Every structure is written in structure tokens, then in C-alpha cells.
Length: 221
Ligand code: DX5
Ligand code: ZN
Image 1 (spheres, rainbow, N blue to C red):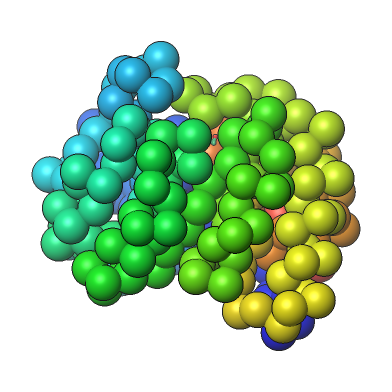
Image 2: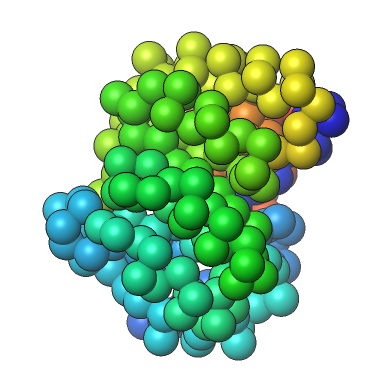
């Protein structure tokens, strides 16, 4: 399976939550492919964001698929709730899963795409045993918890390694990056093999969302 066309997934963490519906409509009109939703529990990461209740409201506000990134301890407790709320993809941090293979199966059984997420210091080998059982791998290019951080360049070889395994095995697995993805960094992530790009600040902080998405797409191609 060869690499897909670059997909841009704006992270609503950087949206104006006083007008979330309008922000989602604007991102959809601007050409976003997916909406990325960052769920934080104040334990796995030093920040708290939102739960299934908000995901359900996001689902009612956009036709775009929701890419839900769980930065929470023991995420198996909430998989079904987020799928019911409208998640198309559920991503779990491998560091937070005691039984990763079981949790991946649980996500698919619930009816969503299964994504496994690696922190910057977690090696690619942590997901190698489940590569044939997932729909997506997400390589964190910052330490999770906050938007607006600097892209960590030392994650690039890990992206290359995963791209190599996915292609060598002919797997239909999307390879996503998240954190500090902007015009200056997206080209390197794409060259390393990523095909889905989460962007918070780089789109929601831009004066024109459509221009920002188009420019990112060009830089990734
Ligand atoms: C970080 C989140 C990211 C973040 C990306 O914990 O997982 O999705 O919102 O924001 P930027 O693009 O600003 O780094
Ligand atoms: Zn995220």
C-alpha cells in the first residue's frame, strides 16, 4: 500500500471555544480533511481539556471525520463512550495501555479506526507487534499536553522507520504526526514518510484558514 495524499487535520485545541461551531464550519469550508480532538486527563499529561460530551457537540457541528487523540491513563475505560460520541478514529498512547493489543481490538470492535500513539521518547518498536492490527500510527513530534510547542527533529528517524515497515509489509496504515507541524516543519515530516498532519497553531493562528491549509498541503506534497 503506497502512501496516501497528504491529509490535514486541524486540532481544535487551538480553536476559539466561545465560537466552536463557527470555527468548525470555517475549517470545513477551508478544506480541512479531518478534525483532530485532543482529550487530556490531567494525569497522563499535565493539562485537562474535554470529554465525550464536547466530542458529541463537535460531531453535530461538522461532517468531517473526527480523529480523537486520547492523552489519558487507561484509555480502555472510555473507548466506547468516544465512539458513541462520534469518533471515526480513536488514538491511544501506547505508554498508557497495559494491554495494547486488546485495546486496539476494542476500538475496532466499537466501530472506529484504531490508532496507536508514540511519545517522542518511545521507540517505534513499541508498536511493531500491533502494526498489522491498526489503521493508523501517530508519532508525537512534541511532548503532549499543550499546543504551540516546538517540533522535535529527533522524531524524524522514527517516522522513517515506521514508513519503512508499513511499505515493506504492504499495510494500509496511515502515518500521522502531531505537534509543531507548520510550514517550516511539515516538509521534513512528509519526506520522512508521514501522510496525515495535525496542525493547531499553524491553522487556527493564521489570518486565513484556507490559505494556511493550502500552503501546508503544498509544502507536504
Ligand atoms: C499536543 C496535541 C496537539 C496540539 C498540536 O498535546 O496533541 O494536537 O494541539 O498543536 P500545535 O500544532 O500548535 O503544536
Ligand atoms: Zn493531538
